[in-house]
Image (cartoon, rainbow, N blue to C red; front, side, top):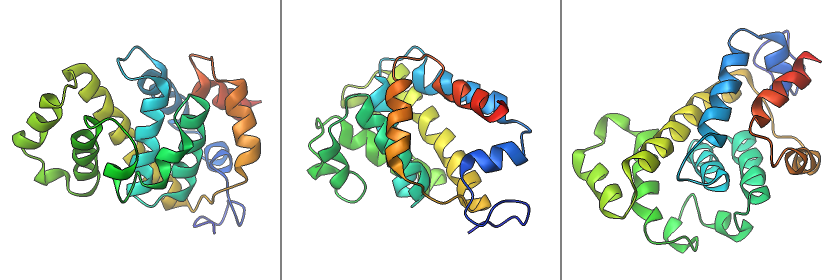
Length: 184
């Protein structure tokens, strides 16, 4: 349900961005840099982190959307069954567990992060660059989750979204491409 009277009763993110365009263009450009730019993490892995962060925040719109995008980019759908509540049962490589624990803590209690938490991630085999990219994805989705939840965006049919994401799978700028649809 919309929390802003000028939005439809069940707003989509597109409705929010059309009504309030300030900052949307640089936000989408940032998403493209973080989620599709140079990284040791694949696009699918970064989308998995976006879905994970959104799931930890119970942001159903972003969790569902980015789970679909992660799957389009090769992440096994079975992973998502346990990813949020029992990541050790999700079927990921063991090195993911300290990274996901770090990102969960960054999402829920960032002031309680310690050097030991970071050391566990690095000791698991993640490079500093991959670790920092994971932090950027997590941070950006903490912000996006608050935009979505703050405005009352509701989950929509993911069937059409899957087709749209399949079509833009090889784009280096899928988020800015979405912005062009908004302007169009």
